[in-house]
Image 1 (tube, one colour):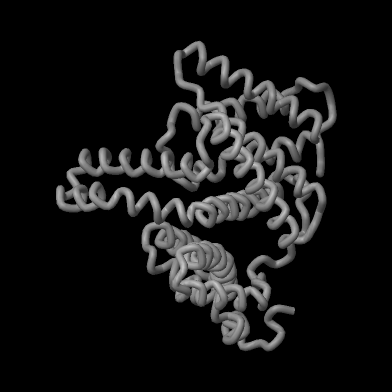
Image 2 (tube, one colour):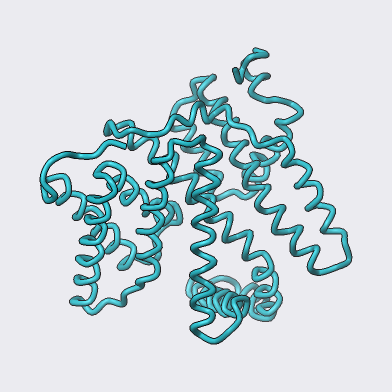
Length: 322
């Protein structure tokens, strides 16, 4: 990776401190921001750790932390230190992964695995500190989220019947989401890695910072053997054992996300080949965020691409992926 030369404190590092401090304050003071914005919060840390180098990047990150914490404490604001630490750790982790110049699959797997292990360790630490089992801590967390959603629904004038239905089924909802929490957590981590790597790839190119050669991501395919894992997970849903059903559901969720990535690669390939205007592309991606059936369609394209090879059909060329 490139790094800026010169004294430790120059216009570049001062600007970096200001941007990272603003990022931490933005997350701390505006908690109800969009999910895409939250996912992208490690991007500034990733960028400056890569651009400035490891030593200067960590120095800038430390100064930004102290500045943000000082402002929050002096203003009497509640400091969510774990969230801020997670943002910094994720950005540094991504920077270190990119320095290896590995393939996109290895980079993605390494970053996702490390972040998942760190998150799991974080949960274990706090559960042991609180003196409760990790799954009980997860259930308490989910229960709090459901209660907050019930309050929000009441404020938004949601019909009382729907609110009562949620309240009456709260134990079942907690049990269900606690069962699939590992898959939801891993999927959130994978999305975070995917979005930040794609955004960093574009940002680095604009500012002339070296970035690993991931090749043509529009031609990316999931490993073919993944379909057998998907089939096995689907079979587990028919096993009359709760543990098998929960495990199968978790595996299905993660497999579905991987095939979603492949479906999005197909969509990107189609947009590029047909020269679809950018506004139409963003409209498509926006619909994915608000229409669940669109996600199912894209996942299906990714899954059946192994047999149909949509990109070959789009170009009419047998060497479409060469």
